[in-house]
Amino acid sequence: MKLTLARFYWPAEALVEALDFPDVVQSEAGSVSVSIIDIPLTHKSINALLTPPFYLEQWFQEQGLYLDTLCGVVIDNYYPPEHPDSSKIRRVFCLLADELDVIPIINKNDLSDSTQWEHFIEQVSVLHEFNQLLNETLTAHRLIEFHTRYKMLFLAHSQPAYRQLGPLIAQIKHEPSLHDFAHQYRQHFMRLLRYPATVQNHTNVVMHLQGYFRKKVSDEARQQLTTLIHQYRLGEISLQAVKHQLRLLQEAAPHGWLAQQRYLYPWFIEYDL
Image (cartoon, rainbow, N blue to C red; front, side, top):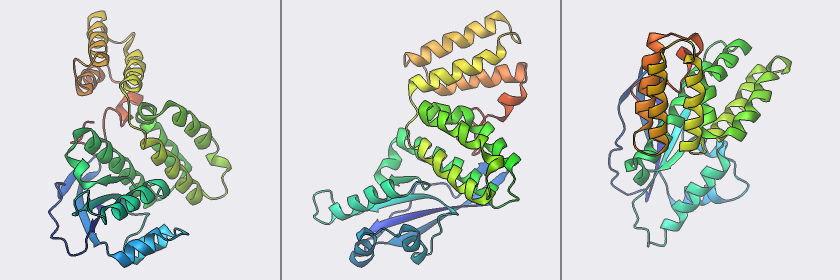
């Protein structure tokens, strides 16, 4: 399997630095090779991009990039912020963020921020799994299974947007074109994932997952999880500590639905976000 990212850098004559991104990531389905395509930006290409109407898909194809296979974009500016041409790259970033509903975008400097890096790689991971699904035999059942796997992760990012996805997926059997529906669904859930997950939403999700163990584990084990959730909500421990405890309970008292959840078992298995 392959994961394709694009890095747009400016100015075109800049000596670009290597991105701190792994060459290979491990997914649930096996190794994924990472390909980073470097695209130099010129005044001509930026002006073409920023001139309405914005035919972004056509512009991307002219760069050798295709929105159905691209999983992320990194914007890399080598001008200092006070340089007059830096404003153009900021406009490019804003345009792509506003107009691209599917592709996650990040500034290169933000890759060093752990919170923004985790948010970016999470979006890339979800999109990569869905794109693999599109490349295989597409069925309504497989789309519903994908939605089921990601319910808790979607809920952690936006409760209102999550509630809109349910009725959408419920109409799947009435859709005349499964291919068109899949692209529409992808647009909706990738918009949802742009909302940063919050402590409050994560707390609601882990409390929901805790309910699956109510009658299956000891009172002591449930109380230990309750304590961890409370400590997480207060900022005393990480979310990973709570997820670790949930996985231990899942091992002790297996539940089929929980075993599917990407919230606990991500597609990129080395990224427990």
